[in-house]
Image (cartoon, rainbow, N blue to C red; front, top):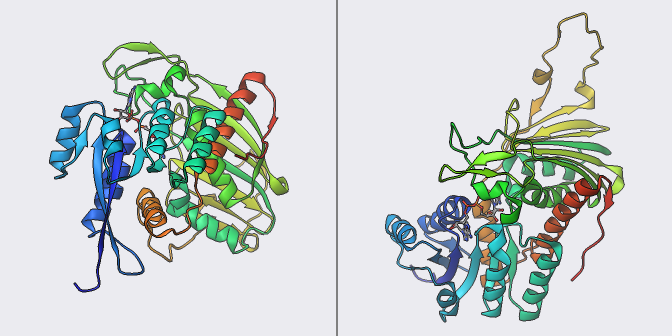
Amino acid sequence: MAGIQQRSVRIVMNGVTGRMGYRQHLLRSILAIRNEGGLRLGDGTVVWPEPVLVGRNEAKLAAIAKDHELDHWTTDLDEALAAPDAEIYFDAQVTSRRAESVSKAIAAGLHVYTEKPTAENTEGALELARLAAAAGVKVGVVQDKLFLPGLRKLKRLVDGGFFGRILSVRGEFGYWVFEGDWQEAQRPSWNYRAEDGGGIIVDMFCHWRYVLEEIFAPVRSVQALAATHIPRRVDEQGRPYDATADDAAYGIFELDGGVVAQVNSSWTTRVFRDELVEFQVDGTEGSAVAGLRRCRVQHRSTTPKPVWNPDLAATEDFRAQWQEVPDNEEFDNGFKVQWELFLRHVVSGEEFPWDFLAGARGVQLAELGLRSAREGRRLDVPDLTL
Ligand SMILES: NC(=O)c1ccc[n+]([C@@H]2O[C@H](COP(=O)([O-])OP(=O)(O)OC[C@H]3O[C@@H](n4cnc5c(N)ncnc54)[C@H](O)[C@@H]3O)[C@@H](O)[C@H]2O)c1
């Protein structure tokens, strides 16, 4: 068609044999964009992502490439980064491998988009942000939870003033991750070893930082209690190992304006909820419960007046007293939406707020959460600058 210009963008994708790299980033994002014919920009340009698969296992990479009719894969990251047309480096490796590879990509002059956490500690995460700023490359970090339909609707409620003054936020995240003995574990074993970058605080507090800040207000303090409830697990090869990382974290966060957020994160709880994560928000004018997809509200005008009486069986169906918030728009896969925004950022300079400093703030909250748990006290969260 006249007027349409295709603009290929070569993306070096490291860690695509992993859970997140393969399913969310390659399949549901990059290949989904290709299946839709590319990403169309306002000026008619069609961005065509051209992935180069990178990993440690050639056979696995070749199999993925064959399954999806892709031409480029390699086990040599340096070679992939040195290719003259390589433009973006993407990293979904295990967390402990990230900082080194991202640094190499920045040094090679590539723009970088990466999974969280960006590094294993705040100083490492800030160092990446400084390197990127000095090199003048564009960078982004995955903050997928912001794009969940349930949380988008929650944000809409906040922006529309539904809550009045927000008092508190209570988050429940988690599910039972099998120990790996009589049933296979549904998460990789490195998640349960601190020495390999595992632990639920490192994994989840990065998310809670941007969720709390973008929907409610900046996080000013953290108090966390970490537990390793299951001390022995069985790995992918059937070998028992010591679980050295926290598998549950009980956190309290104070936000600007006096909002109190309590978030439980657990791989050792059984789900009696409607979704794997849910946030209840209570405000003077109304309350909401938001999950991955759904969001329900109760306005003060429809709030019933329960009376405590343990002698009687519950007389009211409390869940039925809430009202569903309608979608009112279409929600695409959150990882894909964020990839599209990053590609627009790289190709046409559009705004992309979730940079390496945002990534470092997530790592900072995790680091402070772990320290708070170790020292048994509440810690302030200082502002971060480069
Ligand atoms: N955004 C999210 O919601 C979300 C969810 C889960 C995980 N993550 C992040 O994504 C990253 C990958 O997590 P995952 O669950 O896909 O893990 P995974 O174990 O399934 O995949 C890890 C990938 O890293 C590669 N790798 C490189 N060096 C390795 C090493 N020394 N040991 C083991 N693997 C190595 C593996 O080959 C594989 O491709 C982590 O940083 C994690 O924090 C993000």
